[in-house]
Image (cartoon, rainbow, N blue to C red; front, side, top):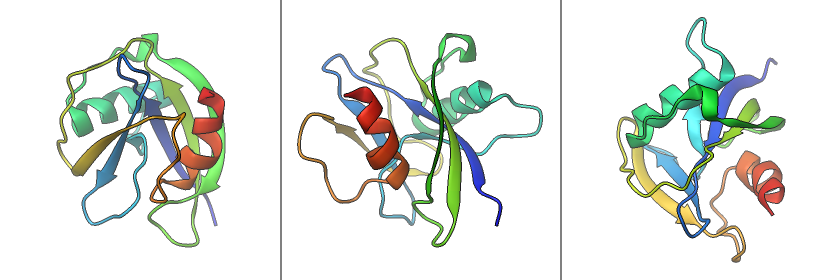
Amino acid sequence: MEPIRVSALVVRDPAGRVLTVRKRGTERFMLVGGKPEPGETPAETAARECAEEVGLRVDAGVLVALGRHDAAAANEPGQRVEAHVFAHPDPVTAVAPAGEIAELRWLDPGAPLPDDLAPLLEHHVLPLLG
Protein backbone atom coordinates (compact mmCIF):
# COMPACT_ATOMS: atom_id res chain seq x y z
CA MET A 1 0.00 0.00 0.00
CA GLU A 2 1.34 3.44 -0.94
CA PRO A 3 2.10 5.77 1.98
CA ILE A 4 0.10 8.94 2.47
CA ARG A 5 2.36 11.81 1.39
CA VAL A 6 2.22 14.92 3.54
CA SER A 7 4.19 17.97 4.57
CA ALA A 8 4.41 19.04 8.21
CA LEU A 9 5.66 22.21 9.86
CA VAL A 10 7.31 22.73 13.24
CA VAL A 11 6.14 26.06 14.65
CA ARG A 12 7.60 27.20 17.97
CA ASP A 13 6.68 29.96 20.39
CA PRO A 14 9.23 32.24 22.14
CA ALA A 15 9.54 29.67 24.98
CA GLY A 16 10.52 26.94 22.49
CA ARG A 17 7.25 25.04 22.77
CA VAL A 18 6.01 23.24 19.64
CA LEU A 19 2.58 23.94 18.19
CA THR A 20 0.44 20.81 17.87
CA VAL A 21 -3.05 20.52 16.43
CA ARG A 22 -5.91 18.05 16.63
CA LYS A 23 -8.22 17.75 13.65
CA ARG A 24 -11.98 17.43 14.09
CA GLY A 25 -13.09 13.85 14.69
CA THR A 26 -9.62 12.66 15.75
CA GLU A 27 -7.83 12.10 19.05
CA ARG A 28 -4.13 12.53 18.24
CA PHE A 29 -2.19 15.79 18.22
CA MET A 30 0.20 16.37 15.34
CA LEU A 31 2.12 19.09 13.58
CA VAL A 32 0.41 21.57 11.30
CA GLY A 33 0.38 20.14 7.79
CA GLY A 34 -1.34 17.96 5.25
CA LYS A 35 -1.49 16.58 1.75
CA PRO A 36 -0.14 18.45 -1.30
CA GLU A 37 -2.27 19.97 -3.99
CA PRO A 38 -1.25 19.33 -7.62
CA GLY A 39 1.97 21.13 -8.55
CA GLU A 40 2.96 22.13 -5.01
CA THR A 41 6.41 21.56 -3.61
CA PRO A 42 6.58 20.05 -0.12
CA ALA A 43 7.52 23.45 1.36
CA GLU A 44 4.61 25.14 -0.43
CA THR A 45 2.27 22.50 0.98
CA ALA A 46 3.53 23.14 4.51
CA ALA A 47 3.10 26.90 4.11
CA ARG A 48 -0.42 26.61 2.66
CA GLU A 49 -1.56 24.15 5.32
CA CYS A 50 -0.18 26.41 8.06
CA ALA A 51 -2.27 29.32 6.78
CA GLU A 52 -5.39 27.15 6.42
CA GLU A 53 -5.10 25.41 9.79
CA VAL A 54 -3.87 28.12 12.17
CA GLY A 55 -4.00 31.38 10.20
CA LEU A 56 -0.22 31.83 10.11
CA ARG A 57 1.06 33.01 6.73
CA VAL A 58 4.62 31.90 6.04
CA ASP A 59 6.88 32.13 3.02
CA ALA A 60 7.76 28.63 1.81
CA GLY A 61 11.22 29.94 0.90
CA VAL A 62 12.21 30.57 4.53
CA LEU A 63 11.25 27.15 5.86
CA VAL A 64 14.09 24.94 7.09
CA ALA A 65 14.00 21.32 5.90
CA LEU A 66 14.19 18.73 8.69
CA GLY A 67 14.11 15.72 6.38
CA ARG A 68 11.69 13.14 5.06
CA HIS A 69 10.31 10.68 7.59
CA ASP A 70 8.17 7.55 7.46
CA ALA A 71 5.77 6.72 10.32
CA ALA A 72 2.49 5.04 11.14
CA ALA A 73 -0.44 7.30 10.22
CA ALA A 74 -2.10 8.84 13.27
CA ASN A 75 -5.68 8.69 12.05
CA GLU A 76 -5.74 5.99 9.36
CA PRO A 77 -5.24 2.55 10.91
CA GLY A 78 -2.86 0.32 8.95
CA GLN A 79 -1.59 3.25 6.85
CA ARG A 80 1.81 4.92 6.84
CA VAL A 81 2.74 8.52 6.18
CA GLU A 82 5.75 9.80 4.31
CA ALA A 83 6.30 13.32 5.59
CA HIS A 84 8.52 16.14 4.47
CA VAL A 85 9.09 18.02 7.70
CA PHE A 86 10.05 21.69 7.88
CA ALA A 87 10.66 24.21 10.65
CA HIS A 88 9.52 27.81 10.75
CA PRO A 89 12.68 29.86 11.48
CA ASP A 90 11.12 32.40 13.89
CA PRO A 91 9.12 32.18 17.13
CA VAL A 92 5.38 32.68 16.69
CA THR A 93 2.67 33.81 19.11
CA ALA A 94 -0.46 34.57 17.09
CA VAL A 95 -2.19 31.40 15.93
CA ALA A 96 -5.77 30.15 16.23
CA PRO A 97 -7.56 26.97 15.16
CA ALA A 98 -9.18 27.28 11.73
CA GLY A 99 -10.51 25.03 8.99
CA GLU A 100 -10.47 21.39 10.08
CA ILE A 101 -8.62 22.07 13.35
CA ALA A 102 -10.63 21.44 16.49
CA GLU A 103 -7.93 22.26 19.02
CA LEU A 104 -4.36 23.45 19.31
CA ARG A 105 -1.87 22.87 22.09
CA TRP A 106 1.68 24.08 22.74
CA LEU A 107 3.97 21.21 23.67
CA ASP A 108 7.15 21.52 25.73
CA PRO A 109 9.51 19.00 24.08
CA GLY A 110 11.58 18.78 27.29
CA ALA A 111 8.64 17.82 29.51
CA PRO A 112 7.04 14.38 29.83
CA LEU A 113 5.09 13.72 26.64
CA PRO A 114 1.32 13.19 26.61
CA ASP A 115 0.07 9.87 25.28
CA ASP A 116 -2.02 11.39 22.49
CA LEU A 117 0.71 12.39 20.01
CA ALA A 118 0.94 11.27 16.39
CA PRO A 119 3.72 8.72 15.80
CA LEU A 120 5.53 11.03 13.34
CA LEU A 121 5.73 13.78 15.94
CA GLU A 122 6.62 11.55 18.89
CA HIS A 123 9.11 9.17 17.28
CA HIS A 124 10.73 11.25 14.53
CA VAL A 125 10.31 15.01 14.93
CA LEU A 126 10.63 15.57 18.68
CA PRO A 127 13.92 13.61 18.87
CA LEU A 128 15.31 15.91 16.14
CA LEU A 129 14.44 18.98 18.19
CA GLY A 130 16.29 17.81 21.29
